Length: 113
Length: 110
Image (tube, rainbow over all chains, first blue to last red):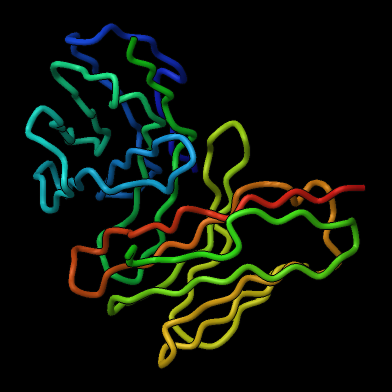
């Protein structure tokens, strides 16, 4: 059983550019959530995907979008990058159901200059 | 006011000390998580609990649903316990997403 993996581990982008971050869910998990963690803060919920559809979203603008694929891997896309988008982006996978535990990936550290 | 509050924000202890980290929350929850985050960024789930108490090795987590409060205890602390400990609650009214505290940075000195 493989854990949650994310790529890339680090990324530097310029303001105004677009970025795609990737997440591979733990085997058997059909739900993935993305979180943004600014330096010194706890993670903030961006959105969640279940069976390829977004079914929950936090307080993030539409330039944050996502995809989930049939194999349950996922992408987070951010358009028109701003300096404040610099953060650690975490994905977490689980099996659908309120009692199921989330398993986190190692994160992608994005720096916007 | 944040929905999940942790205390203390920073904690320095000597090796061998008993450590307590507290978490209070203001929303209805279906479960509470204690997570550990090392400097590299990766998060490891320590406990998920909805009532009572759980123990794993030197770690103990308790929750009081009526008081909306949870504690994480570390017995016989060791320098390798140095990390950020995060409390997160699963909002009972949502799709199971987590609301996080800001974390408690623990440093255990040898």
